[in-house]
Image 1 (cartoon, rainbow, N blue to C red):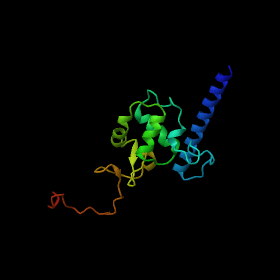
Image 2 (cartoon, rainbow, N blue to C red):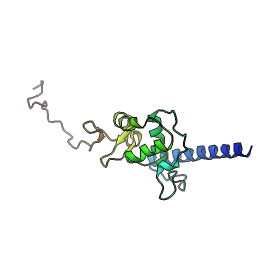
Image 3 (cartoon, rainbow, N blue to C red):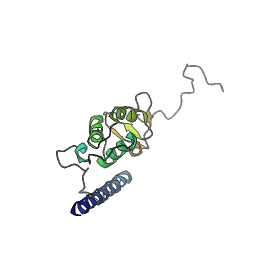
Image 4 (cartoon, helix red, strand yellow):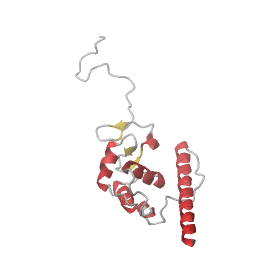
Length: 157
């Protein structure tokens, strides 16, 4: 009986903490102060985000949703190695799909120029550089040149 109560308490605490992280993420997205400033990212000081997961947290779950949980809990961009370690710690058995999922699911994940990975929703106002699937610098040329890529005039001329 005592083990069941402790398990229930741990589950509820985890759910409350996840709720608090979500609220803080939304606050940051809106540019307002976090409502729960003392919750951190689920890891204690000096500990990686990967060690903050239950051993069966990601067991038999799609890789995309696992990566999303890791990034949302961290509430900051992470390197590939740390994302993969978190999935491994959480019991995901499809670790070979992590890099492919990050690279191909550009509607969900965004690779930053510094090599870290974040949620695309955090950067919705920034275009993607399709050549290397990272954030592109905003286009600074306000006027189109009027020429086709081949250098000739437009058909209207």
